[in-house]
Each structure stands twice: as structure tokens, then as C-alpha cells.
Image (tube, rainbow, N blue to C red; front, side):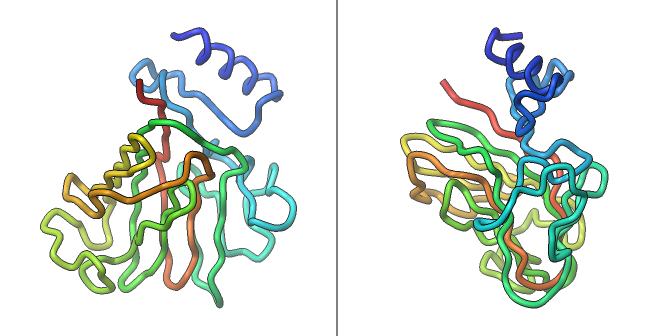
Length: 188
């Protein structure tokens, strides 16, 4: 384990660095896990207090349920953001499952990548590997502030421009969405 990873792990275990948890799995030793698998610690709305130790957002639009952050249906658009900021070249992975016609978004340091029931709600209606109402994986690779985004290996956005730093966000628009296995790692 790298020294930096060991320090982050120790600090998160003793509660000094609660916004990050590091996996014990050696295959994931270089990954930062912004969601701790039990509550919304490390997440907040753009305005208001962080949801430290809470299993649900103040308005009920987001719920921590085991290894999953659930985006609950409701009125109006709400965005949940990591309290941590990320910069530099990196890889981000997340799995999502959308109910029929669900509409959400995944924010990459600011810009939004549409995450939906793609075959019904678009904009990526021609995806061949998208699994409706099942788990799908988005991979975002950022190099020099340009993100290459795929879903199950198919290109969503080839050159999404992103700022030098920013948080990771989830959007609640309509329909139920679920996100799990969100992980981030720095690239050399």
C-alpha cells in the first residue's frame, strides 16, 4: 500500500478524515471511495449543512441504503455533491440502475453527464450494451481536464471538458435511480 493511501486509511478509521474511506481489498488499494456504505457523510447540497451521519437527505430525495445511494422520486431537481474536491488526471467509476424513464445526472467536477433510462429517455438511445432496469457501469477517464466517458464500454462523451477541480455530484430529477461502487483514483 502506498504511504498516502495508508495515511488516508488511518485518518479515516480514526475519524479525522471522514470524507473518504479506503477499501481493504488489495485490488482497490489505490481507489478513494466517497460513499462509506452506511450514510451520507461526505455529501451535501450546494447550500446547507453536510449530511454527516445521516442516512437520508433533509428532503428525502437521497437515501443511503447499504452499498447504494438511492435517488428517490420527488418534485424539482436536487443535486447531491461530495464535500471533497477532486483535481488532476483521474479515473472515476460508478454503477447505476434506472427505473423505466428515470432521469438523473452524474456531475464530473461540475459538468453533467446525463444518466437515465437511456433507451427510453435518451440521449444515448443507440447504446447496444445498456441493460434496462439493471446495473450498468460508467467509467470516466480525465486527462488534462478532458473526460472520456463510457457506459459498459460504449462512448457517451469522447471529450467532455471539465474544470481543473470540483466535486462529484448526483442529480435527482424524476424517477428512481440507484448508484453504487463509486470510486476514484488518481492517474499518473
